[in-house]
Image 1 (tube, rainbow, N blue to C red):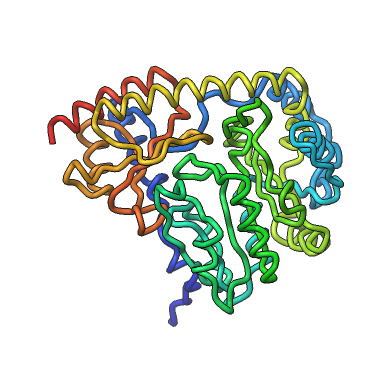
Image 2 (tube, rainbow, N blue to C red; image 1 turned 135 degrees about the vertical axis):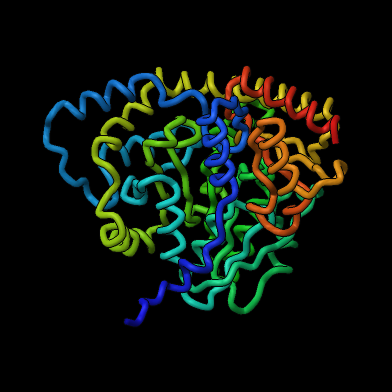
Length: 393
């Protein structure tokens, strides 16, 4: 009997080490060992007030039919309201497509813009799943190594140096995972303008935008839509709203992609979860938004705890984060590569961290990501254990 052939895209997919480290941490906990879990970008807060009650109400036995593929109209209007009130950007709710998490949004964005042979420029380091999606659709990732001088972000010069005749899109993330750094708005405008002039798509991951530090005048961090109204924006309910397991996100699409995105979405997913969409409308009440702002301030306090702690330990953070909830620190001074550092920190000190190998080769062997989405007690314990581990090397 002939054995069926597994699709090459499945065989070539690389593991996401943050998840495998999380799985090993759970194994240790099952053995009765306490682990300081600082590896995953999962806020400790949970959903904002009112959302749980709205979910209970949605699950009261009523029918829960499919929504339109693009999402519940009331939720799309609520998302548009957030852009209008927080960023001063007027969006037709038709341009907003609700997805089953930002991961589904990234999948759709890639499917909409990448043909076999196309190249997509990304920063190195960057979120690993973005690279896998481009590969799965037959594209090629043009990784552009970044440095602390550019805050580990793309700038116009770096993008243009990575450009080729096959470049179809540029993907940016601001704030970034793993570095927690933002792109200066004038540089974001320049990168988007350069790509637009050359006929390439601009895909901007703004999953952490609402967790970016405000401007000096107190105004909210600016969306790329202010600079480039036709950019494809990927966002999520997972980080600012703390709803990781609820699996809900959204895309903002240019008019040219609205129809094709709807067609792809209905074929890929039919729609996002109906009760989750119904509950998520409550994210946009004044009380929920106020609670989320309080949480953003708490994350700022946690950032200070982590940066001070890493400095005391002697683990330098080359670029101070100004968003998200990550610190990307350099372990080259310990004499260990990043994977060995993380493996030993977990097994010997029981601290879960993420090695830079997840995020690209430029910093893969030298840097480690720490998530300060965990609570203060867990952060303090993790830093104390990490200090003891480094001192013993």
